[in-house]
Length: 264
Image (cartoon, rainbow, N blue to C red; front, top):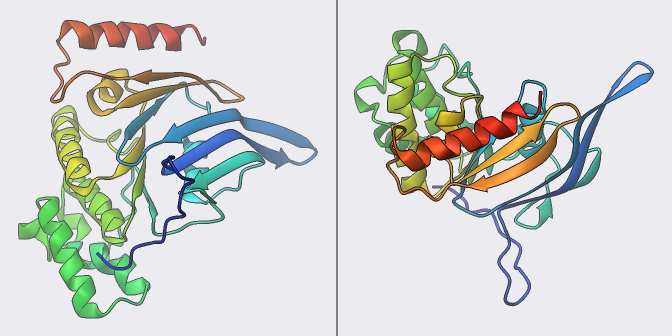
């Protein structure tokens, strides 16, 4: 899948996390005023973990994703990937948005191949990469279709495949299923878990839906409103596939709902 990014060696007997976020603040200047969007955020993500971020609107979830992606610089603290500071965007981190962000003039295959082509890969290699990920996300029949010919669920699968084809190790997802109907959302949740398992990805997934977070995540991270702080980091030990009607599932739902309710 193209070049492998070099990872710094950890000290003897230790294993570096893929992401190490320590005491991070994010401040924005508005004229003479300074707004603190995120305060003292600390989060460690191991390779292959699926993390869901939940919290009220305006709590800094999307801001944290944008800093991990390298679109925003931290105001204080440290944000490391494989032990090195995140200094800007890179192909090792890919972002999937609710509105898909596909190029309407490119086919499914061309959208997926865009990253490798832009990075100077030979056309044959980029095409082979696109075919592999088209197949992985179940869109082989639609490889030559254009975005306007696809359903919302299909577009989201293309967006995920495009990130994976660019050698991403961390996939950042900002409410990616929020605009989809319930049946499509449920199907894509299952497909995302399948892709995650096959590709050994680390995923950080923002959602407002507590049930979605419990259904998907290894850990659910709860954030408080402005300035955003991480107030809880709950490990979800339920075996997959998970049953939203189960007793343990609903106990977790009540617990997380109580945490969020206490923030108002």
